[in-house]
Length: 288
Image: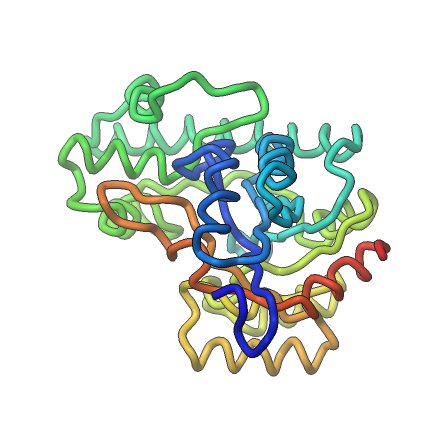
């Protein structure tokens, strides 16, 4: 995969155990190299806890590691995710803002677990933590995939997709929304930290008018055109949208690892971009 039409390939959307992925960030870097990629971005939810380890592994094995993040926001009654690339991940103001988002995530988790128990689905935070199998650091947090894993293990769902569809997806009985920042605010945070903001997986929101509104109001640098949950028609539609607004057309697998033998979203490297996209993101972030 490394060379496709003479161009190096990069997966710009992967998660690690710093948020709701299954593996240490160094594994993502090694696996990306094994798959023939030239580089990989680490984009955990509301945290940059996995970046140092990934960057060190990249230096060790000669892989490009792109520092990233995926920020949780809310607009139009939907959870909207904003990716950031090449920001100063040591910036204290940026780190304090992410910490507040993780606090909101922890509050949502407590409310969702309480909602599930009110529905007769008896899972506890302690059981979810046991499923993770290790203590979390202060800059890590529990995500819905961790809950889904517990639901499957306790027999409330047959697999991860069933757990989300039946209990955890937006609109499902166990889902709870908490106040979050607007996309424009997250985009400004990423820019203030010297990064390039990108609207993640627009096809998952089911509302292209909302996506256009966010683009017009918040002025991101890019739009995630290629994603594991976008079919060819969606990728063509979002490529046209990116071109219309003059945005960088990015892409990535949204790899989280395998739970219950199933890879959620997509396998590492199954969506990628070339050097030109990397250069455009670096330029948008003010880097050479």
